[in-house]
Length: 92
Image (cartoon, rainbow, N blue to C red; front, side, top):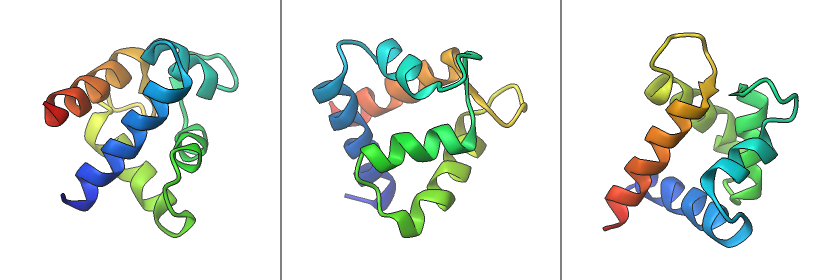
């Protein structure tokens, strides 16, 4: 399992074990309710997913880089859904 797969797996476990739906997880971590996850909100998600503090900043930047399709430096609900779909697909 690559590091990326390991991180995505931890995120999936967090969402599956603590939230009824991915949308509930998104809304929980969207602290200011602007329907976008900021880098710090993503870092909070990663912390809850037990991603090491040492790499949390790097991972949050890479997640934004990889899934921010509209280039606003945030992850909106549609982009989050795409990331979750990739996690589920890689788990199959």
